[in-house]
Image (cartoon, rainbow, N blue to C red; front, side, top):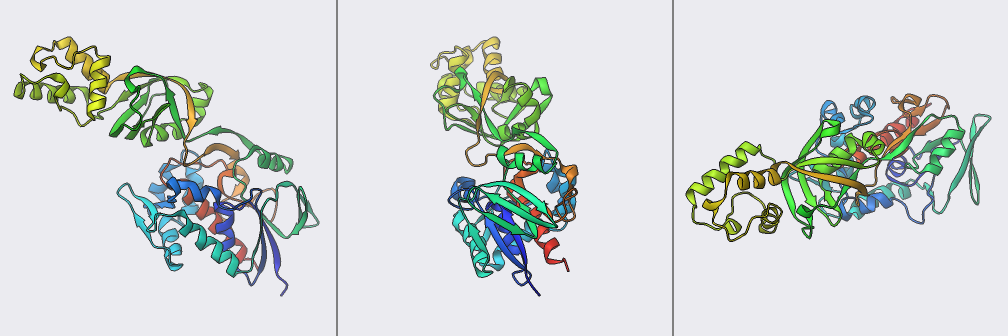
Length: 403
């Protein structure tokens, strides 16, 4: 039987994983990648360690980490979920580990372990990879596809479209009559100029609480002071869930930060207890809360309290000011920065255009889509990659099961 031709547009996470699972006895496969190297996002993910997935094995729970696509992904994850991805890797001698926060990494702590496992599968199947091939158009003619790049033309029986969310790749889909939801950034950090954060980059908080009063949104989790403002899971989760609303606000809004992550009245109780037990201690050397000395001194500075002042001499007003700066600090956000490990967008192909049993386009037979080109995105922690693996696996299964 003559092999059918599959052209995969995009040599990233979805494209490569789809190829790695396709049946080489049924298909000739060509991967077209516009950059000079494949799997670039996989390479830099997790600081080069590759946060390959997240240890959440119930599809009903897993979909709760996806601001967009949660309904559609439930059926996808019921067929291929993080446990299946971990098993797939381990069968290919890539051992993985679950870290304390449930993120999944290769034991090697190197993304090259993941990349090599994909590349080896593709090479062993004798599939072809062409880099520096920028696709300009996809045309369907007589039940086959003509894929045109800047330099070449390729004819194919099936197209798997995994380009990521570049505006150029979405324009090609618009020409094929796909409905596109406008793109907005999804995972980003907050730019803040505030005296409380000045010169404290690298200072972290284990379980901060951050809220945006205007949007009635609150998140908690680890948080980090950066050169530009605030980052870490607590910030990134809010940026994902409120991506559309924050874009409308042009990234100018007020946040309320609780650095301690405890109720202000509980913080007051801790303060009073410490004061009673250590009445003669200087406030600057008082270790009352689980924060760094540098940050404690900064809080005292913005509260206009002398570090040498005896703790028993503090007035009620001064104590209240300290507690408010720790547990209810108002700050103005005046922009955003890309989260360095994962550039993720909300928007892309409208999910109503896709049959999620196969990941095939409803309007074009034999045309499949996966990855960030779709209007699906997740919070940070390996979830965006897992959506890519699961969608790509379903495409490969669908094609492998065709007569």
